[in-house]
Length: 579
Image (cartoon, rainbow, N blue to C red; front, side, top):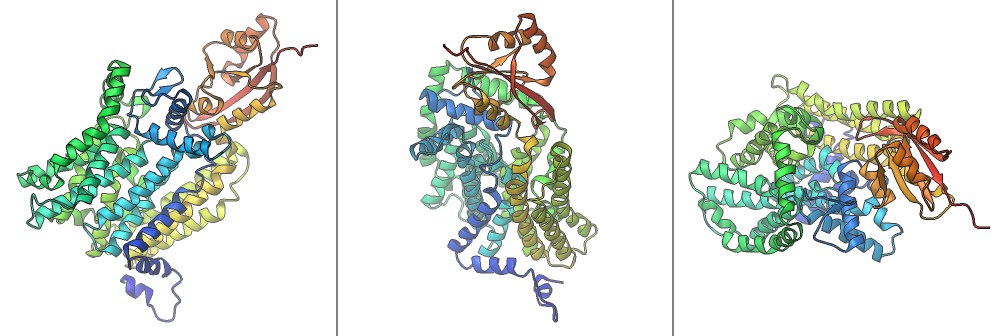
């Protein structure tokens, strides 16, 4: 049964025709298409942007380093407390500092510890990535299909997560998409017999600006994402002349002009230490082994994609035979060159994180919609219905998992989010049923709708009431109970970057119970946090110097970074009031 037949069955009202009707209306112009994509992005990305706590460990590291740029006025060096943070270039820190500085100028209270301000570059980067994915898809598909492909990318789980995190990856994805669309047009121009013919100036500038900003955001990653497919396609064509369409004589000097000043400045300021840390330690540690306990075997991304690229992954898997069978077509050859070599490279590298392959997902979405338009998403193929059924697993798994977590740690259920969670599960089931009945486009639209329900349910309604996850914010709130202003603060055992971000750059980290007891007995107003594992040793050290610390509160919860329960007690010491 085709989508049209599915929508026009006599005697039965079609309650879910409206997603495709919206698609039809939005495809009437590029302006409408972009407006629909922005609206979808806001629904999927905005809920929880302000209420989600700083997510350890990477996000608060970036945010704290940006905060310290504002505190010191040093826009060249990158620091986390007293430690040089020479892992990534400066682009994301400049963007975050700019938004926080603007927030301060507008009078936003406590702007420097408002994590939502640091997340705005990621939010805008994610929206930009979706719009650039639409622009890229137009090189392969007519407007309506390009809109569907971009919406499928906007709905994917990992982009929704990265849009809410003050890190590099959403902005990096936007930069990669800028090069993707331009490089695709250069390659497809070659296929049309115009090899070497110059592209429009706007397309050329989009490529080189995406490359330059990408280098400032995450060093070699955008050159890798666009350079590897360019190399593979040039070898396939036995010529690189098609790359002349990108006007490297203009673009290379422009890129150098944008990126060179900061790299020269950090080289001078760090004495070359930046490159030793960024290349010699950060990059090589990920290539040689599982950096920061993020090791996974080859094939991990292929397995994880059914979650990270939900709801599109199951349908992308069904379109894979079509892509391989038509790999000699110019457009499909480009999409495979964008996906396969880089994917294989990431599978080989021992360090793996779900967001590393995010810039490959728009190409997966475009391939999926290409397969749809050619009738290749066929439920009659062996195993097709079972594969499509994977679209149900993520909303059902999240509903059960979040409910179990909330009951285990907070002795409650996420009542506020349950209606939308269950609605997302129901719509995902409808998507699977639509595919099983031969309405593949209807299934994709319903999958996108399920994502638009799931994101507000998880981030907007469920996450805010899960107190067990908010260890650092609850600890920071205990500072208000100290009977004096601006206490000196230290921590014994709990060392999460989110705590540094919320408490302040001067937060002291104690190594031993004796140091912690000595700190609390020091002059002036003091506040000390002690993790439960260190509590007996701290009590013994305090008793040894004849000191009985005064607790001001306790916090118990779940440390996401360590994956374990934590219990902390805050102790205060205030000077005796002057008679």
